[in-house]
Length: 256
Image 1 (cartoon, one colour):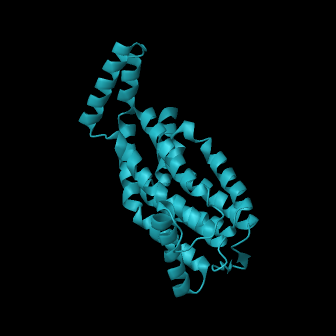
Image 2 (tube, rainbow, N blue to C red; image 1 turned 90 degrees about the horizontal axis):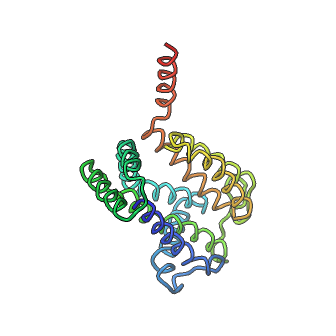
């Protein structure tokens, strides 16, 4: 069931991403046609422009809107985290069921699905609870990414600079900072507790650095600010310093 949910999630992500890819480098305006342009990209462009006019630069407009979006989706993030924690709590019982119904015949697998659903219901775990928040976030986050890219392709929008860094051109410095901040996000998040996810701690930062070196610096600025907000969220929610304390206690107890 979980695999099916992730397959659906992946397909939806691809559809959302491809929905704007054909116009990725095209100018954007209030007359742009299509659902993606009218209800996602242009509204985000308008909000960025509003704060840019208010604060004086597009850099500050991007920073403020990034923070607003991250705070707006915070309740969804918290709901997703709560669901993930509940799922982690029942992992031992789920593994017991997997071992009990290891046979791949249809009857055994049907019993496995029934007991798994009963376990989730009794534990108050909803598999969709962890996926739906991501589905809600993706159009916003991908749309923001497209909004900045298409603003850069529109002559009417002059992105200007941030700390003397031209936002319309790639910046190696901002790309590296964005990658390092992504590494810190993963270090302070739940990935540290999942051995299978640890490889992503190295792959994702390198991917962001690579993209940042090829794309406008405005996108790297978006990643930097978004990752800073994510680090602060992780510090408040996961309290990674407690992990070190727990590990030290466990080691000391084992030595005895």
